[in-house]
Length: 288
Image (cartoon, rainbow, N blue to C red; front, side):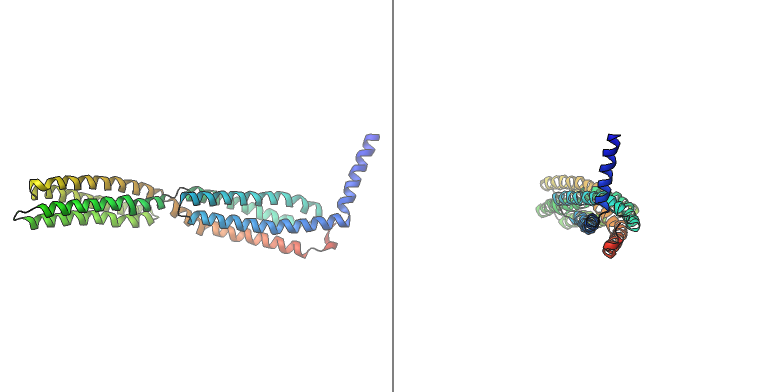
């Protein structure tokens, strides 16, 4: 009996504290603070995620992805802290608004998680760097070797060697030019078409090299061999570029960020602002 009396006394005291005007006012103030903090942290999370998508280095993408995770964790923590306060105050409409937000926020986190996992791979940016760096250097090495082979040829048919050499360089340049649209392309069918054009240009370049070897003097053939080696390097790099481009992580993450994610951001933002307005319109008399 004594134990039941003590328990009842404690519960009664706690209820009195909760139901007291001062306690209700404190909880109302805290609910407004958490509601405002929810909007701040959600906006911060969305902005950091967008920066991860737009970042031009792996390090920056990873840093913004980590910032996004911290902010989204804070949002969930605030949701979990706010719900019992609203329930205790008897704010049923506000609980409904919070639940609406939380449901959309779960969808948002799923989409955003996919976006961030793609963004940190940066395959399109890596393909672009290969194209503008090592691949471009291999093309220049190829061109120099062709020019050297043609310049060293002093036969009466040197014009023929020059024409063949120009054909070989033009074919390799064609592959180089096709890399940029392949990297930017989002559709598999279009990328396949570009790869077919690359393969045709490679066949043309290798055919021209075989013809050039026969057209130049023996002294110039070492330069043709060097050109062939440069073409081999370029095509190996081109294969890496195509593989990275096929992953399309930057293009896909940007498409998700501008599409499905933007719609979810707008819905979540509307829920949070409605919750803020509802709490702002609550006065002291509205508390239990």
